[in-house]
Image (cartoon, rainbow, N blue to C red; front, side):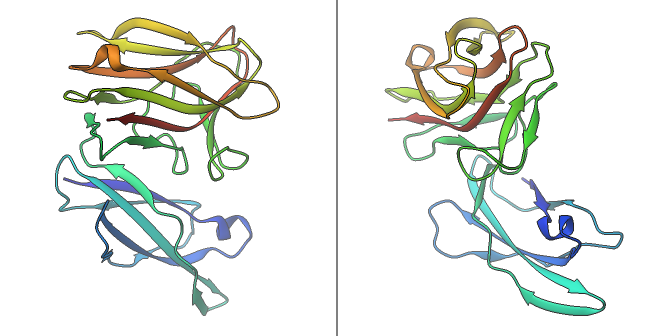
Length: 231
């Protein structure tokens, strides 16, 4: 199994592009980081650099981190500190939630395997870290998760942070053969502050669901730090 991660070079935005990244990874819960070969940011340099890591175990939760080295006028500078770890499940089709493996997504590395439509990731101003997913173009497309399964769990909740005009956004639950809408919740939120929402998904244990966020009448809606937790 593979994992594809995107390295965002913020030094590039400041005119000092990174010449290389050093990447490490490990299974969540393990102590030792595994070194991956250095990834070279080839000239002409880019802000986004994709890297695929092979040989990973299926249906496993991995975390990845990277540091960067800046080069300027032919001189290599010291390596930076490692960034905060990014977590990814190795099976892109279905994510299986267990009491020890919650589902987490915070948009720090973009939408990944969510269906964005007209939504877009913003890289500063989010509740958790810097990134969040924003929608403000006036239509009503859904930001939809990949398939999530939590068979065998006793209690499941979804929690996330939202910001936007009060009463102008919904959480939708999709289930069944064709993933039809089975339930909708009006989000609790305000325009000025991030507000956490928590909803039970226990009614859908024993199968798979997708969750989606949709603005009402095209109003602005911001979503961050999504977790699906089971016990």
